[in-house]
Image 1 (cartoon, rainbow, N blue to C red):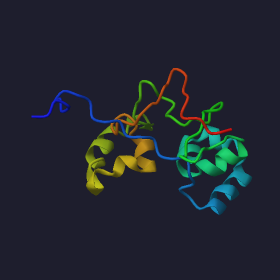
Image 2: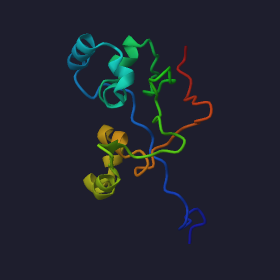
Image 3: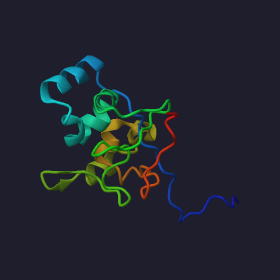
Image 4: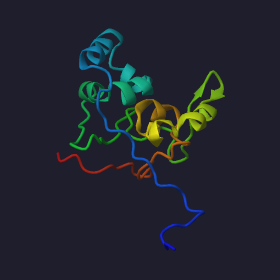
Length: 141
């Protein structure tokens, strides 16, 4: 019997993925050069989940050694739906059924990947941080 294990307790929060480029730097930089740095804030999938460090660089946002940054304008570390996290919608349909079907695949690590965090923020129970002040750990500036 373990006092810490409560059957009705919420599962542990998954930490948001680090701000890194999941695409090659050259692809990210070329895309930004062609479409403009506004892609980093208008397209969350691109800016936060595919080319985060390249976007942070052009938006002059400091990313600390842990891959965390303080949100600036529409460039956010935590999902825009926080504190009431939701799963994404596409053409009026929620990704939730897809999220539920596949989140436990790959030995349960799917929720630690960029595409799952983008589509399945609520289903994967991704941490929203301190959403009132939205202040992740200091960047050391």
